[in-house]
Image (cartoon, chains in turn blue, brown, cyan, yellow):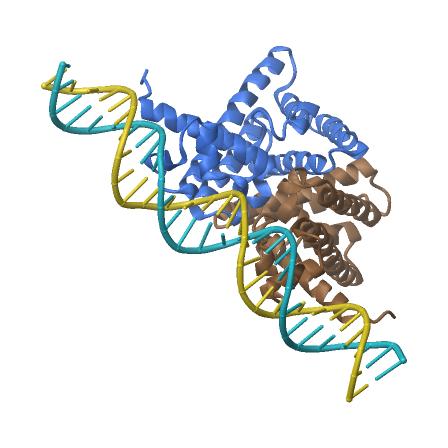
Length: 195
Length: 195
DNA sequence: TTAAAAATATGATGATCATCATATAATCAA
DNA sequence: TTGATTATATGATGATCATCATATTTTTAA
């Protein structure tokens, strides 16, 4: 059990703040001074923790992914313990009204929140993004009890992320939750026999 | 045939430049002075054409959508004239290697390029985004010869946009074109009997 | 307790940005 | 051609931003 040093704890606190900001406002809206202030620190001290803003973005994206994975793990365990099939549980959690509305709060999926910026990232941050995507594909494959091929798992992942992103884009109209609900039910039905 | 006034032509030129920039660099990276310079104008004159930067973003997103729709229409007409089924043609065009690589050039899909920012937009621009999404759903439904329900058309649209976005996020790795090709072939197969 | 080391704060620099008031240039109607 | 109108340019303002050199505070080790 490695106790975190003071500096490591501060580092983690900065990451947590940064992860929240990029999920809510996007990569470009993250201002170093802002992150530090919201972490209870002054902005000049930032460079004792990160070599520059890009380094923070890369770590923050990874942190956001880890946060989401942990919350997902807990939600999945809960639903599975209630007797829901793993893949069904995943679909229902990912396309839940809660996840639709959690654009800004909590630990929503960073791929849905930031995915269209991935191709614009610098190499280091893009590598982190790639790992997040692969982690989703692997998780889906695992939840299908390896029934789905890697490509099929990618396709379902694409559908889930695309549907959530589009529904969020329609938020405020009736269409948002109509499409989301229909997608959720259709996918649960479609994948019900393969797990 | 309404001839465009000088001002209207300039307005369109600014929009074209802005559409190119947001597709390539994202909404936040668009700088007014930059748009004007790349349009061959000085930045101060901007406010004779748009009330502010947000107004430009809203119009530029609409312009990008119209550009993409036009290019898509042409590509579809070409493929359909060669005997390809409409929905198959759409899937193959949308998930083509060309579209994967056209993040920055040409008239690629603005939803794939900007979709994760949609929920963050101001009301006016978000309304434009919503119209773009609905247009895609309607187009898919139309290409299915109305065989697909609106919800099913939304789901296919989500899959296409999600798959392109994720593949772009993996660009530079082997996985990108592997997943893209597999997705394209799987979807063509899956939707081959319903058109 | 005190010196050394580590962590954080202060304050500044140069760059970029949206916006706008005003000036010049281009167009058009008489 | 001339005057009026429209379109574009000039130049400035205040705000925000990443970065960093240096100072202060806090922690750690003796």
